[in-house]
Amino acid sequence: MKNTGGKESLIADISLLLVALIWGGGFIAAKVALSSITPFYLLSFRFLCSGIILYIIFFKKVIKIDRQSFIAGIILGLILYVGQTFQTVGLKYTTPGKQSFLTASYAAMVPFASWLVIRKIPNIYAILAGFLTLIGIGFLSLQQNISIGFGDSLTLLFTVVYSFQIILIGIYARRNINPINLTTVQLLSAGIFTLISALIFEPPMHVPDIKGIYGILYLIIFNTAIAFLVQNAAQKYTSDTRASIILSLESVFGCFLSVLLMGEVFTKKMIIGCIIIFIAVILSKIDKLHSMPIR
Image 1 (cartoon, rainbow, N blue to C red):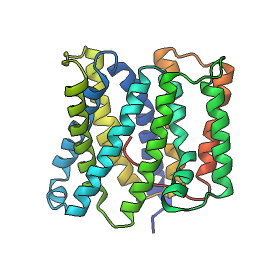
Image 2: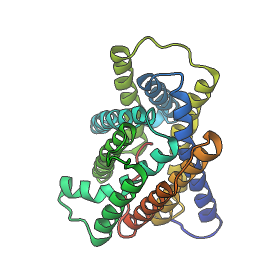
Image 3: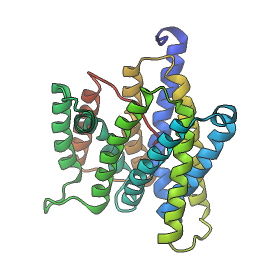
């Protein structure tokens, strides 16, 4: 039973709010980094360095990893590689604010992915959340010719992959696989997959400019390693419901920071779409909550 009262609970909630802020800033950092480094090289730096950091911190646990955890980590690493490829390439063709809210729509897709994978029928909240998500995406992304931009389309593909990743993590969690071992192998294997892709599909890497380096360091240190450590520590002292809703604020932070730091402009139609998607995200968490994988 989690301790959800008193000073520890307050500190935990504030810590998770910090994680949501860090994740929101990650959209800005990635956009900045992509101005001076190609997507696969960016992802390979992020995942390999983050995985190495976790390996060093939790060396005594990771060194004892069993075969089941190792294979599960590689499978999740492959899924992470596919999903993050969609998201990162998509970010080159859309704005950080729009992507932050489109990414948040994964929460409404999870129950339907669960229906396909483990045959669990979505409840009324999930169905309503899914319907609202489609409406919100329409307001946010549909252009005058009733088409969705290339970057937004890739981001939506990411949310589909991400929702299946959550289901798979839930399956592994029920097998009592150590989450630290699982995440470390997942990051390292995703880093290897993206590095191979970079060497095959992208031109030789040039040294990023100073802004690009700052963006890469932010993604490695804050968006992945620190956020993972803080989240896992904080969720011991607060409820799953509160944790999930607080972490959903990453879309709000991402939008706010994009407007503040990058001058992104939101039309009234786009703002309505963001609000509808955020309502759908909260609604999708009313009945049952899901594990939060790597972002």
